[in-house]
Image 1 (spheres, rainbow, N blue to C red):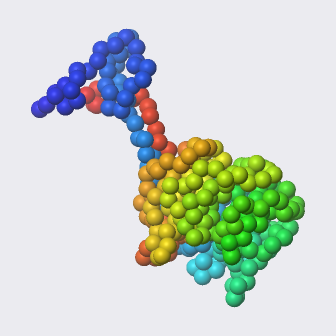
Image 2: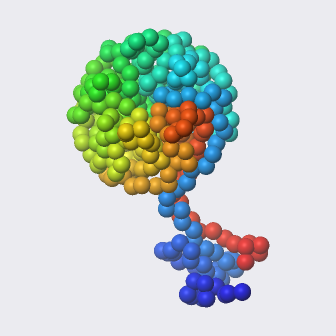
Image 3: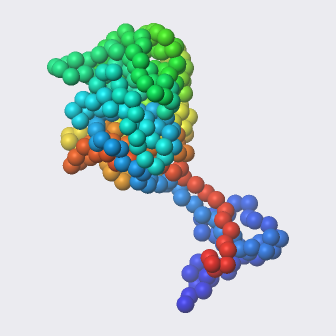
Length: 324
């Protein structure tokens, strides 16, 4: 059996304190604590399967975090179904008042907002907005412009944005908890884009039809073009904040999906681990450290699958007797 030096080109270091800048795979023996340690790195992050939704659906939206999320509405065909996720399984809860697809969602699993979308019927875009209180949905103030194929920030039920929409509009509206106000337009009109943000003063809008790479940042007054995606895409989803965002999977026409996922650091996008199931028309929840994506359309079917995101990590670990 080969020893450590043969495998790795060096002996195990014997040190009085842990190295200040270890590299992935480095192992050492700490004489102060009398334990063997090593450094591990997962620079790409990873996706793992979560519990399946009860009803497969696409062109859907949601709200919340990885361990407490909602997914509502969607096309199976159009549905009013609403499901709640507890970190392992989905449970059907109070339905929407109006079945719809291709709309914007914001908020948390106990205080969410759903704005506009497409109802049954030819080109039946709606301006209707509904608010979730943890038990039921109530209709609140309508958006000024009925739309579909737009995106709602991952804001709150009292402070959010909706922007873009079909046919590639630039319109942007701000929600203050009771009414919608038209504010500064996007620089590039688009539909089927993704985005994220904390509230109506801070947001990103990235990608969109036709498979755009363009990324814009909102400061509460105006949109500014910032670092582009590496892979253009449409009909997809995003999570996070203006300085820490995820762009997850999506459509890359004609007729294809990408499994590619990118992470944004406030300046530029970096490719990280791909989703297991490439999809479009899906939803997301959470952050760049603990995210979630669910539903959508894979290359072969509408899916109920959920995937959970674990961020890139670096850490020092201690080995016990069974490890060595």
